[in-house]
Amino acid sequence: MSGELLPLGRSGFPQVLNTEDTATLLGISPSTLNCWAARREAGEDVGPPFRAVSGKVRRWLLDELLDWLDGQKR
Image (cartoon, rainbow, N blue to C red):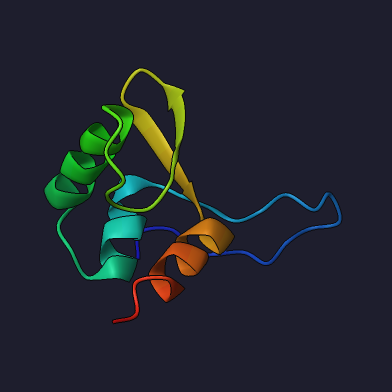
């Protein structure tokens, strides 16, 4: 991963991942993740939930990402 994940600090802020780190964690390309995010913004229920920080800058919360991944069991 491009950035080292740090544990929660005293502030209680969750771990936040960028596109590259999220894609790496999921084993997909950043372009696939961005495609899913665009479809999610359009109202489809595809891909993990994210936060739009500004413009096309998106961030994923690690806890939400892991919850979403856990829900993908078949």
